[in-house]
Length: 604
Image 1 (spheres, one colour):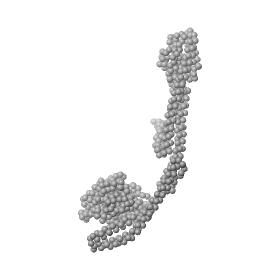
Image 2 (tube, one colour):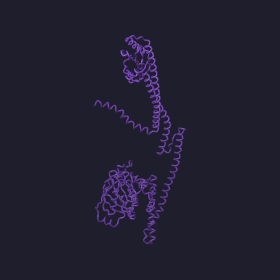
Image 3 (spheres, helix red, strand yellow):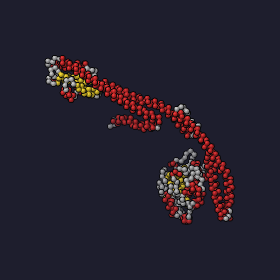
Image 4 (cartoon, helix red, strand yellow):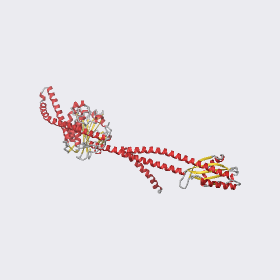
């Protein structure tokens, strides 16, 4: 068994190597237009040449075999005529003279026959002929004469000829084509002789083999020559196209001076010239857009700076009137309140525009300091508390009792969370907004989730675009500018973090803000670094665990909630995060309706 294994392995080796190479060859051909065209044309040429060669080969072989058969029949007919003439002129007085005659006759016919005559076989037949000993010039071919042919010859009349194709072997080759021809001769004494002759078509078969080999070599050489010619032609086509593609890649990567070299005057040359013209046109458009964009950025920056002084003055006057509004008539006092609110909105718009102009100018930077992330979360909640109360939205903030430190710009993190909370409150539809924390040794994640109207997938793609608002009517009610989430994304990028969002209509929107624990300018966070991350194409499933802690209700909190917070400081309501099995602790949850809604939201 062991001795057979190497042989078997050696036989399987080439097939195994071919099976491994075929996928690579297929990939190489399918990924290259030049190779695909060359391969296709070479295969088509080979098939066409093989078809013509096969037809020619069949025709030539048929002609050669017909010619050999006709020649053998003619030669055998001459042999029969000579043999019959010798018999007619012979004087046969006894069997010994007859035996001598047929022996001499066989030798004479063999000597006078054609070069492809293998042997002569003469058998005495009829009355008195049975006593004659059969004569053969080459006994090796006696077995080729079949009994059926002997019977046909014996039953025929003198002069008839029978033909039987056969195959024979020689010392070097096997199953060579040939033929046995037979006929009946009449003896002077009234008896008859059966004459058989074996003919070889080896010369014709050799000729056919040589022609077959020549046609095969011609087909292969033709395919190679055609392949080389097509390769040269395709190289002249593909190379300039490849140069144009390379130039296009340089242009796309930012090298606006890249141009294709015009080396042809045909259609390829037209392509090169058209590409260069397109590049020139693009450069002109880019220069125009950059000029307009620069002017717009400068205009926004200048206007924002110029408006700060009058807005500050208006703010001061508004604050003064706000301090004395109790002495005004109710309608005047309401006007003062509206003035104060709109002035605050105006100041926020200016602040957002100034921040955007800093990002555009590349002058924005983050002052990263190790800070407990619970602090900016608390500051953001304080900033939106009044808005939540006005919209009757409960803010359920779950944070651990111990600090969660990370390198951050506290002001910017506060602004990110404030913008996320403001967006959640706008679309919460009186349902609670949850804030939770997750952390590991590499990153910290802040979760902000509402259970309101949600956002359809088409709008979700644009949620971080500047000046984009999913619902303009809602934005008008809350005074949004469409810059909050865009600024939040920019602030996140300054921290080398990630801000991701998932949403579904009727189920709400969920944001995950993740920043690294330690500042690292060389590497952004990888998905596996996130303590909690969304599962692709699934809502609201996440991977990871949120930190357990005390849940504090803020924003719109009714009397029942106030009583609950005063009387209960250890009550816990654990909710299971969908898709993870992670338990999130919540304490002091006020009101069965709020607690149930939060639990339902997590369990979807």
